[in-house]
Image 1 (tube, rainbow, N blue to C red):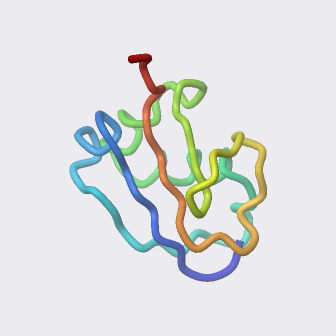
Image 2 (image 1 turned 120 degrees about the vertical axis):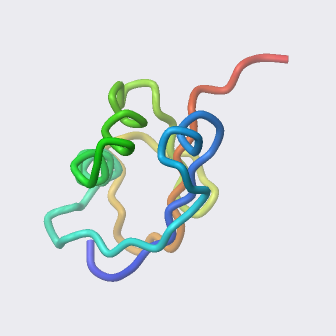
Length: 87
């Protein structure tokens, strides 16, 4: 991935990281949602805590739900949130 992207955090992901959103510029080696989670996890204890179980984290690129292996190319906004509960 090249360039800056807005990252949004929701629910307990937001609470653990301590912010609702930020602009990040991941290195070129970060190509998928899963790569981004790994990179973010290495940024500090709060990120590591938020992403400690990446299989339960849901993601959306430009408001479209995606899987962990989805490419980030062209993404303007990436959101991370816990699983939704029914209702």
